[in-house]
Length: 439
Image 1 (tube, rainbow, N blue to C red):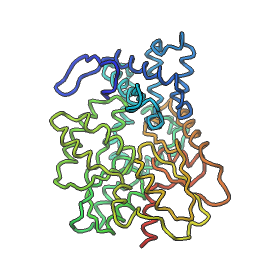
Image 2: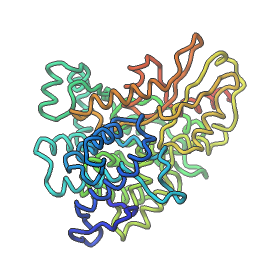
Image 3: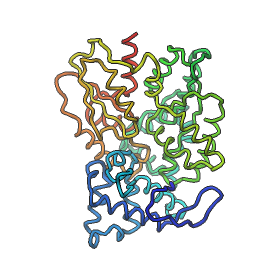
Image 4: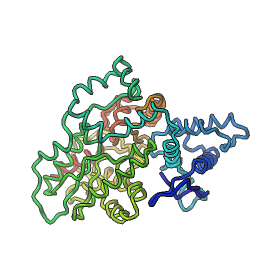
């Protein structure tokens, strides 16, 4: 991804009518500059494997000079990043009050782009990058064959999983979420919807993480909006393209942006576009307009202004997210809320204000990070496991009283539940429960 935050201007190799193509040396110099700042700070060393790997590698470099790191060493750092967003949230070297603008995940995306464009990936790496990012092709194939795919993928470290690894590069030990036999869009089209009213229509953008995987929370949101008389329609079933960008497939992502801009902007409705996944929502808000063709960019910016999370749509309703419930059914229960780095602070406030007054709410920072499909890549399994273990250690020891753990993110929530034994719920279900209690 091209970034405007570099202190040293990026030298273009060539210029198309819309986007300059950045030079590899500029990207690697910028990465060395970011690492130089991080090596003096080290505040994020406990978040993931990327930062310990950087600091350990610098210990073996003359004068710990990041500019002496080899391209291969930089590539390893890039391959280890899951783009969870935690370091961006914690980093003090960003914003108007800082002389720096450190953004390692964005620099890693730039680096993946030049590696892809310059042909540095092997055939095996290109296949893996494609499998982990081409959800619009793999999803429609996997969903009708859900029974077989789940049989094939649900038993880690088996012979069949090792065969899948040999073909696709997906780790044989990774825990894969179960594919749903019914796509979310199919379910949505069969639901009775509210008739048109003077209330703005909600355009539902499930993205692949909801479209192809069972998600009771998403279905509950649609059911609640229907009961409120809020008309809904399916915006598109396409993927948001986050994994394409992270895999360095920037050209494919920009083609996707053109399609999404036309699909999401074709309706005259000014109502919200409800993106069902927080990480997909953050990705679209950040990357849709910058990667859009100049002629379509005003349309993309208007689309971005309409993007909402399910919690934001629900809290705009008069009957959800307005006050604490006075019920007593949750007495002696504690709530651990693990906010995602992608969630808006207003969403955290809405969650805290909707649980029962008898429930003790504890917000746990740096335990709500998301992991995309890049965490499933062979070679990333140990790093993913260590990241989940770090999140688990931030949770308090379970007490005798029952507790609820609320956090978003399909893959990372599944891994954390396996590590801690907690029953993890999506935060949006707390708002729905509070609304039903009030009624």
